[in-house]
Image (cartoon, rainbow, N blue to C red; front, side, top):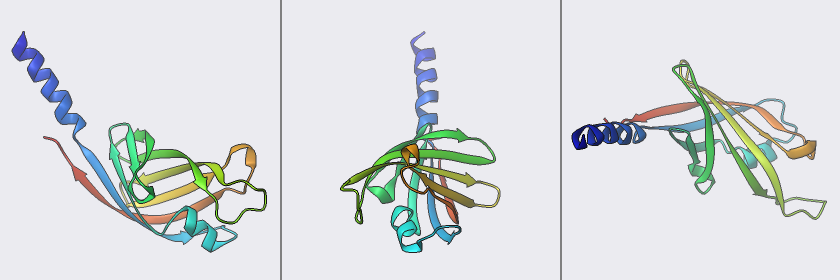
Length: 139
């Protein structure tokens, strides 16, 4: 029984050590009204670590998020974050924001968007780029 338990645990631990690293370069900021503002929220160069159901936005101080889909075609993940605001007329220092990403494995394209609660700000969306997809397996 001990050997069986050890084998099952080692299987689960080895699977949990698999990870995807995405090094992304965003080049198309379509539909954004202010390019410099969009690039502050979604930088041109960024890295994400995808481990099972957890995502880490390495470029944004290791912000933690959630993977909502990871299959043979694509990876979807998001982060909820209180973003510090530089320019603000309303006296607010931080804005709750939701970062959403989709990486398409077949063509290496990535889409990004940032939305805000109760439509407090105009969403930053339709941002596209490509990612280098590095896969590390625990096996």
